[in-house]
Image (cartoon, rainbow, N blue to C red; front, side):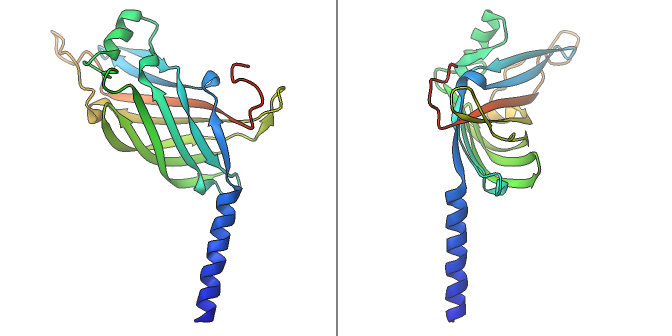
Length: 203
């Protein structure tokens, strides 16, 4: 029985030590963005981005499977380089930013980890709907010191979602058949993470 207590105590100490070793990083909004691509008339691809991405990441390179991510994307920051199209995307036909101003991602587990790569599962909430999504992550990179005394790392995550799964289902059928817009949407999230910021993030 005593050995059992010792084992449990040892595991608790180890778990606490691992949790304490994880470092908290802040997403640098100025140097981060989320991109997406949608097929138009099934013959071309329209690309856009959300320019306002924020959140935090708990990450220890010695224990990558313990990584935790919470990210928030301001849906109103959508930019496809066409103002009228962007206004339509903000409307109730698509993102309905008046009701749902943000989309969020909260990690639940790291499915797989190997040097330089992570496969991160989590809950993506978009348009009031939450679904599990798995991100393929390239990174995080090795930390570097910037000229202002802060430490930074970077990462890029990709996934493909079906927008109809999240209730973003507006479309039109073309005269010759086929849909105006594609339903499968590849997404890429590029983030720069900062620790111990000593200056404003607009540097």
